[in-house]
Length: 255
Ligand code: 13P
Image 1: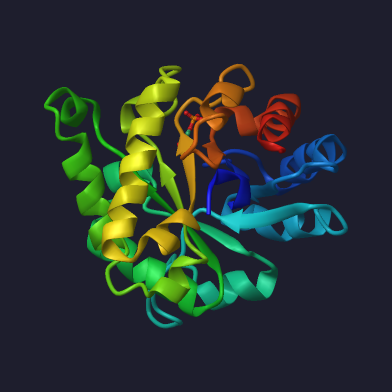
Image 2: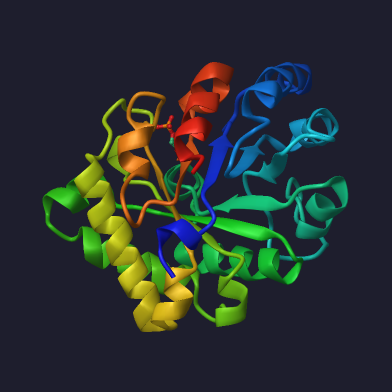
């Protein structure tokens, strides 16, 4: 299997932006612009925006995602949201292990792994984020860092479950900085991620996994990044909040 057979997936990660009414407005702007997309289009939105997003995307080709999920089904976890809650409200995808959660909220590979397994068990699709810090790249340990994250985050995930996993390679130094990995830098790490998956599972299983790039992807650089063999989509922050920019990235991903 090669790139042409993998599902291209463009997902917006709205982070902590947009109120419910603003979410409705933005999705109403995006929907007509992406209606002919030949790729999966997802909006991952803040929890309180999910109901509005599900409503606004009814009858469209846009899927709704969450930005995190707890690993327990229910219980005394004040402030947390379970996979069952997300599923019932209409969520299909869940971003996990985003570097902002790792940096600011104590997320570890162990908790990313617990969340990944819970999300898969609930029949939802995780978008598992990995990526190196600037100084880790400077020290020449990008591959070690990313391999460690892949191995730990996907520990105990079966080959069958892997079919529902999306990996997002997000070099931390490129997130929200305006610095983008070059097409070749991004491809190099995405190819390494696929090779790591092939070792852990099989070449066939690895060939089927959608790997996204994220980190200042925009309407100007998306086509170049997405032309690479191992880059099957994008996880978009800032540019996903502007309908025309997001739609241009979706158009670039449409085969
Ligand atoms: P930016 O596109 O704003 O750099 O954010 C990328 C990101 O973190 C997506 O999850």
